[in-house]
Length: 43
Length: 309
Image 1 (cartoon, each protein chain N blue to C red):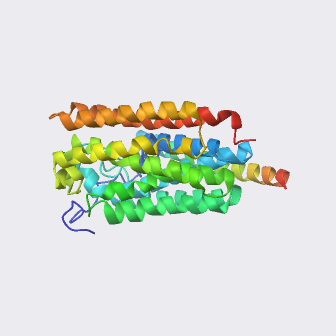
Image 2 (image 1 turned 90 degrees about the vertical axis):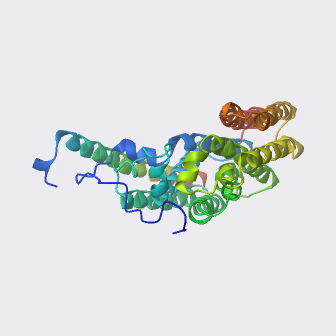
Image 3 (image 1 turned 180 degrees about the vertical axis):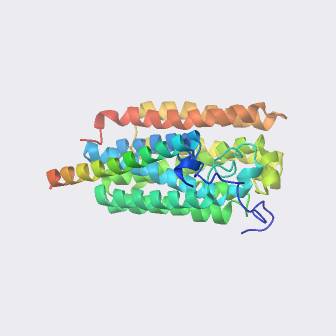
């Protein structure tokens, strides 16, 4: 569906999903960074 | 698909918006957050009472993996059960039967989270905890949801094992092994599950009958269900003392557990005597409080020993 055909509500929903996905990916990067730091520190 | 259930002829949960109608809230709902609360709590309890040490950051990651793994199994369960969810009042507003989410999207979400949670657990914590997490997800999806739920009234007795895994996973995350103490925590939740779910099914039996799910009240009748509730609740009284006998918890836990379990048994007897649904509703509510308090006592009685460093 093109952006022009989407209702304001659909646009908001898509924006929220993109934001959640971005946060999840960011969180995963942080998670792997922390795992690496902690694992290096304990070895 | 098994015969005799609402799965036959099901074509989907209604029209899903072409713009991808599911909201972030719908994806969260797929993870069954209320069930997750109990899973996380019992998992944390398992970590705190286990012998050994685990870095706090890795402990948080382990809890996150347990929560996400449980949620992922819930999402796959909602994908498979979308047909029966649609005909039950308790579940018809879920994202798939309500038509807000494409079933394939829910399945993909569940699979991705399952793999991610097990992989991170293996990389960050240890292989034993990761293997147990994978086993619990697989057990919930394949053994309970796909195999047992629609075939036998013993579905939640055997399937209940899936919900009993979290404290054992937490224990394994800290100690790297599964010992008698961990098995005792597993056994408590395993034995708690039937009275908990059968109390619910006593006042939801119409829902289950409509959906073709052979819950005990539907197949064996109300009287037999109440008898089984009393039997399992009675078995839970000595079993709840196992952590004390095994040295995992102290006298404070033993006294509290004995009192809480006796109250559960009294509630079960009240269900047996009550011709209506009031006692069953009360027992269902109390059974949730019971498990929270039991594991809280376990944490309190072991907290000074502290598993996390």
